[in-house]
Length: 252
Image 1 (cartoon, helix red, strand yellow):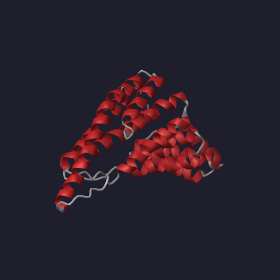
Image 2 (cartoon, rainbow, N blue to C red):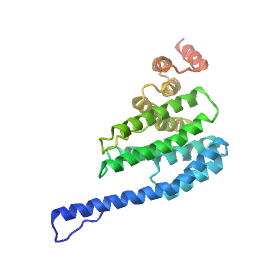
Image 3 (cartoon, rainbow, N blue to C red):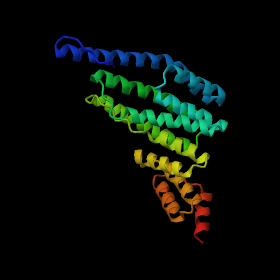
Image 4 (cartoon, one colour):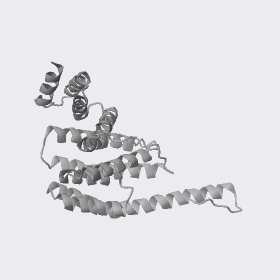
């Protein structure tokens, strides 16, 4: 916001600054509200496995609201089945970076903070429904648990309602998706970093341990691969038997 130089009491200047912040928040809220129908349409297309249509809808949501964190996640998900791994990676990176940018954000009052949390919960609900209504696998159930955990955290903050700052660490499901996109591109070091970030955000993310084991195996770190598999199994994640066999064969 531009500095305000006026010959009035300091309190008036502070009020003007706060008013500017409120106006900016209102504009952001309006953009998000206009983007939501396209965002929801994106997930409708995803459920029908109409990937290009989903990509278009998420892109339209982002055009309206370039700060729409989870719309970038939806965009990345729609691009992966089309094997557009570079574009998917870019979408996930943008999603991650927006979450990082939100970290420690402070609102002018509790009402704004609570509205932000409520909006995030509403947006997560759409993603959760898309996983619940899709084909159920060990991987989808893992991501679904991550999403539900994230929503629960927001719900708890909403109920306590005392904090006007946002703890916006990158959700585990975002780091997990980004790691897989990097893996598809053969960028194994980047993939490992993101899988570790997913584990740091949610230590029960068994798929991240399993995927990390694959990276370790690909790079000749057999002992670490074996440890990662054991960590995955401790979370209840069912590791692919072929991965375990490959690790055992490498140890001989």
